[in-house]
Length: 85
Image (cartoon, rainbow, N blue to C red; front, side, top):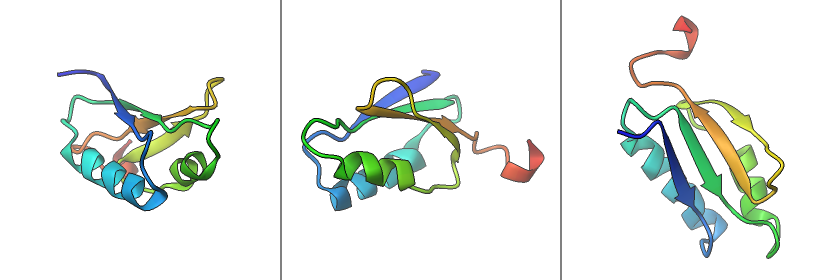
């Protein structure tokens, strides 16, 4: 299984993108430690802003890189709880 996966939100609405993120994070295998979310930014900032405000218990932290069109989620393994790290 991969260490890192990518979720592409191009063409999604804010509402559908939020649902897609939630669904995909639930389906992640325990080996995945990093999710790169492609949201773009040239067509507006609504998706970017939603992704950067998005909350999920699987997300340990978010990395805002030099590419303004993506955000990286560092993932907590299902087998660990936040207080056990």
